Length: 234
Image (tube, rainbow, N blue to C red; front, side, top):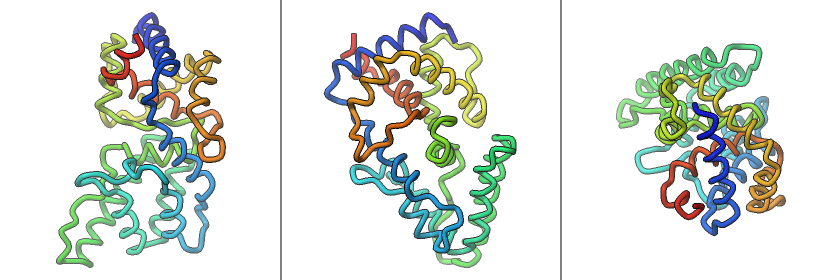
């Protein structure tokens, strides 16, 4: 990653925030605030708590899409074995353990639960839990520890790294390297107080999370790989 190119794109991102009327990333910041307000690993009704933690008044696209419904499948798996899923989340959020091991165990646990689900529901056509590309798992981590993790959209992240001249781009399952690079992005972004102020102006403190968060890194690399947005910032 070339520092001069990173600074160039940070400048473009600042111009984008100054000029745009198309900032539509607020839904992520609302989802983060809602998760922070509702998540309780020890909740008696774990399924209800999980459901309420993933709510948004504007968009459900973080966990619902065409042929993509990880939230719905997770709720089915919670119903199948609530305490097993609770333990999985406890392990995922245990910062005393290696991050790649936590992510790997979480995915493996869902694989096993899906097998049990299919055995218990032999007529079901479900054959995917939608957590195996790290996007949803990174969302859980980001929402739980917003100052440490960022959301992993691999194709956009890869494009960003190519634009920054990187010759050693992390692969789609090298999530620890992705998080480290996201923290580098955030370090430079957070040092620019104008960017912080401009981004906060896009948010509503009554609805959105306003604290420090590596969601800013996600906004940055996602925006900088959308040609139609960056062209308007030039």
